Image 1 (tube, rainbow, N blue to C red):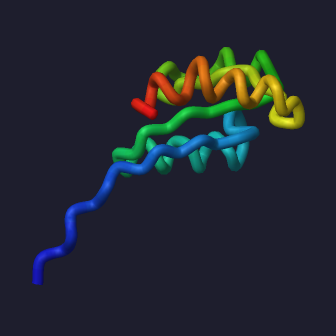
Image 2 (cartoon, one colour):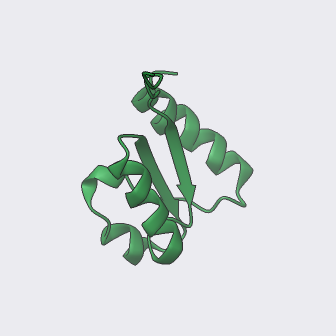
Length: 79
């Protein structure tokens, strides 16, 4: 029996620049998913590898989240 082809997922990991969030982001990336990381800690974001597409973002700022989606995520993910 053949396995169904796996779809590439688009994954946004909040608080993903360090610790458990970073480990999750790297695991999704290793599976072939398209990953973006956001985190409120600029130093942690700066330490992320470029393939995580990390950005500084406070997810409690609704306008900032909407702007980030419109300016960064939607164009990168073709939405």
